[in-house]
Length: 240
Image (cartoon, rainbow, N blue to C red; front, side, top):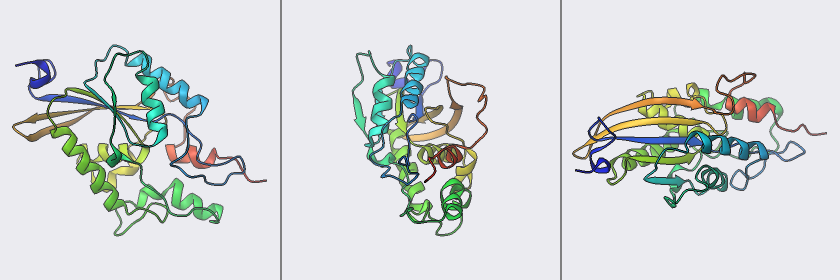
């Protein structure tokens, strides 16, 4: 039996997911107004974060690598994998980010409550992210896709570049924390999480968070005292 079929060395059936958040982007225009999140691209800082991750992961041999269909995840993955012979990037749209509703026109106080601190209400019945996607439906979508991915045969080490809330949901599922866990799992731009899972006979026997929110450009989080959503909200340009 090959290592790929049997799992990571010394652990039968164990596979490892390298779960990244894309690098830094800006979700607001120069006037401080929200922009279409489907169209944002990496900032120069975001590219620097992706290159730092490429150096960290340079000796890891990936069987698979995927992005979510949103350009910021593809740009990050391409920079992480630059110079490698393979694997080719796969698009996995089931891992697209949660979508807010219409944020334009909201007062600064309402915008702050809905966007910067909305995850704290994720477990409430019929709660929505910024008036958009239902948290429950979002969680079911991404965790269902994650379970199916873990059960797919033929891979041992995979890179998945996804998003803040997506990663939080996958980590909360791994930790059996449910929707109430979303606010607790911080995801800084360009970070890395490592999740191991033991898969035997078509069943996930155990799941383990091996590493969480690693940022090679700033391991100690020096000067980073805001949550990831506070970084976006309070760092946005202010309207004149």
